[in-house]
Amino acid sequence: MSAEAPDLTDVEFRLRNARAGVALSVFCGLYLAAYCLATWAQPHRGTILAVAIGAIGGSLAMLAVPLRGILRRPRPREAMFLAWSGVLVALITVVTACDGGVSSPLAAFFFLPPVFAALSYPLLSTVVVVVADIAAYAGTAAVLGGVSSSRELVIALSLTAAGGMCAWQAREHERQRAALARVSRADPLTGALNRRGFDERLDAELSRARRAGAAVGLLFVDLDDFKGTNDRLGHGAGDDQLRWAARTMSAALRPSDTVGRVGGDEFAVLLPGAGPAETAALADRLHAELAAGAPASLGKATFPVDGEGAAALRQVADLDLYAAKHGRAQRHTTAGPRELSWAATLARAVDERMAIRHEHSAAVARYAALIGARHGFDDAALSTLRLAAILHDIGKIAVPEAVLRKPEPLTDAERRLVEHHPGAGADMVARIDGLAELAPWVRHSHEHVDGSGYPDGLAGDAIPLEARILHVADAFDAMTSERAYSAAMPVDDALAELRRCAGRQFDAACVEHLCAALAGPGDGARPVDDVVGLV
Image (cartoon, rainbow, N blue to C red):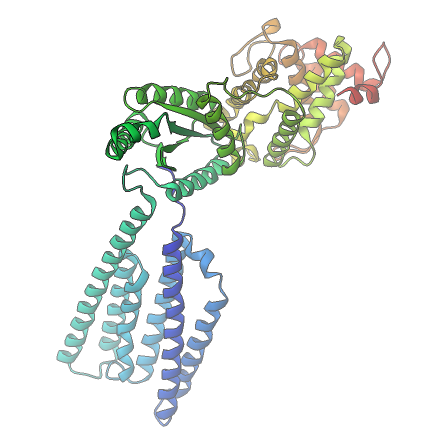
């Protein structure tokens, strides 16, 4: 299952307890200071007063800490609470030792850390605090003495009993919070997530997918003629149909997928890791399974192809659902300003993930157009080639950023991830009508003419000419620009390297066309500025 979004109710509960802890610490500090002044004739009053002032100041300083942000993240939250309790136990130990040992009335403070821990700490953290607190009391008693063994034993046993009750209370709080969280996120009729729970899960899964470079599928499911079912058979039959639909979808999906009821007869399905093809296949499966008892129309969207955020994905899936609901052809787009803007935006996002200091995709487009012009491409073909060049690396959106920016040689597993990106990019491009022609060029833009490239190991003329052009243009810009794993090469050295590998890695004619184009407009080549203007 995907990571849960933080429970905002739980965060606010813990925030209130943290502020109560600050107030309690300030109060204890003031009490300690008053006790110190009242017994000033006794030894170590200066040390005790310093501890009191430090406790008050440190507690007030907690109000300046961004507690809400820390409390939203479990590991930092528990680390902060344990550190807070550890400091508190240490201060109690110090002032008790300074006041003569466990015979001091200040030893009563040892009962405070377990009680506070029980208010909001998880069970394991509470147990850690209880054990540390009892150990501190026992250690102080053993080293300094001051009371009889029987009294030490009674107080130690009292601390243990109180600590046990606090641990039990912490466990009950955890159970209650978990139960409330389930109720607040679940639809009571179907057992699926409600809208709030589904939206939180969607946001969390998109966040994870952005970090990991993964895909996410989203389906909207709307039961057909549900109102008619209620009118003809009654609301009880409608409720039965909703429950059956939720059970059927859950049974047909993968364990990692999530079903939510987001409206009266509307469901949503979250598909972590599902690209366009997988999402479409799962939509077809659900459509077939639901036909037996709850016929439905479905709409689909996929991250990052159809949008970068939850709102964009919902809009695309809703439009797709509307088209299916009204018997129209599923949504299609054509290559126009919207697609060109989408391509440029996604290409820039990939360049930023690779930490490239210039627009790599745009540079590849310029070099590809230079080669294409010398091959005799007309203006329309050059424009299409340039668009393919802009899109040639978009599959890297599915490659983890740490791999793209890694300065050291890649491991075999990391290399396999990278070699998957041309196919992933081609799948994205193929989803858009008007750009399907570009998909094979993107897919094969890393093939080598000797057959040693990827993803399909094509060789020679089996590789589309446009893909061979993109490979040369991409390699030239990669060599002449600063990368995490290499410094920029001089242009002449890069061209020499292309020529050295021509006939093995690169198409020899494409290499020579680029060399000639960069050398100048002679031999019938168009001026560079004219070619760039076309693209």
